[in-house]
Length: 162
Image (cartoon, rainbow, N blue to C red; front, side, top):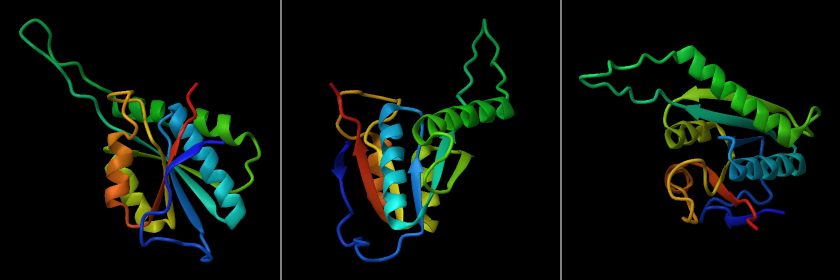
C-alpha cells in the first residue's frame, strides 16, 4: 500500500460528500502509477470515475553555428505521450478497470494542465515525484504546485521505495 504524503488539503475535506470525478496525473513514473492505483481504489469506494491526464510539451530546439535548430513533430510527440499514458493505465488498471477511466493527453506544463483539469474535479491525485529533477527530494515541483494551486482537494502519493 502506498504511503500518503499529503491527505486532504486543509479546509477541503469531502468526507461524506459524493465524489464524481477524480483526476490523476500520470507521467509513467512509478510514483504516478502508484497515484493512479490510489485514485482507482478511491474512485471504486466512492462510485466516481477517473480522468488520467498526461501533460507533454515541445522540447526546446537547440542550434548553433555548426548545427541548425532541429524541427520537432508535434503530432509525433503527442502520439508518444498517448502511448506512455496508455501503457501506464493498462499496467495499473488492466483490461477491465473497476471504474470508468478517461485518458487525456494535453500539451502544456504538467502543473498547469493538472491545476486546470482540477477545476472540474472533486479530487486531484498526483505522485510525489515524477521523472524530472532531483530524485532525493521528498516532494517534486509538480506535486508542490498542485498542492498550492489546485481548486479541489489534493492527495499526493509516494511510491514505497526499497
